Length: 370
Image (cartoon, helix red, strand yellow):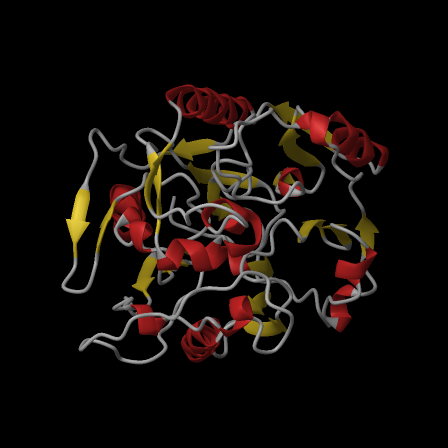
């Protein structure tokens, strides 16, 4: 079946689930610092001590447990009669070099980040972290199968990603209090100015309408490209600095008329058409639902990561079994919850919505914003 997906909640038929195999390390350099500044900044810019740079190894136990939990997610989806596709796995560490910088490839775990389906089209978005530059190559066997079945397949312009490609104003507080100071980027003979940089997880789909978060000039350029490309088919609603990048741990539609929203402050920032939708607020997470980590373990997400749930249909949601308080709230609001364990969600930057790319859903291009 070819790709067909317009929203986040209609019956899920086919999905790609990521892989964490060979997720051995994080590379701390400029692009990584910019992306994770608000949650990991204290690690690589400590108040006292030497700033952290370079390759930061991940403990083998964490990676093994991550992959156990991902396989549990795969099993749960198959038990729900969803066809599951997987990326190619890394069999070894892969270092690569462009004319401008070098990095080591990470596995395609958070597959929601760099690809999105708009109707019958797969769009690959330009990476924001250098180590992820070739990550979507691991998805190409799946994308080629969909292409052969009739899907459109588009890749947004690939960035050069020199230091000067990045708009650092959001992080350095040029328009608001600084969240994390970033040292001056270096100049290069290959600089082209700000470039398109955008993660697909900055978009949430509502049939013909898409809300998209823009926090930097990089995002704004990418959204301008998307608006031109999707003109006449989808309407983009820009939310300016709703977050620094991803928004699927701030707001997720669970079915038409119902949103999972982090808190009332977030709800007040939503576009007008969503103000009338019912809101479910998750309970405030407590520290005891997360594993205890050592000082050398880098945290990459906020404590709200567990609201990153995956809707299987308008009544069924996959949520983290380790946050039973959220499961109870969802059940009280009429949802059937499929509990799946996800232990190290704060170390690997994603939840169940992040780990999945829904390629076939039963819904059509409805107009939910009129």
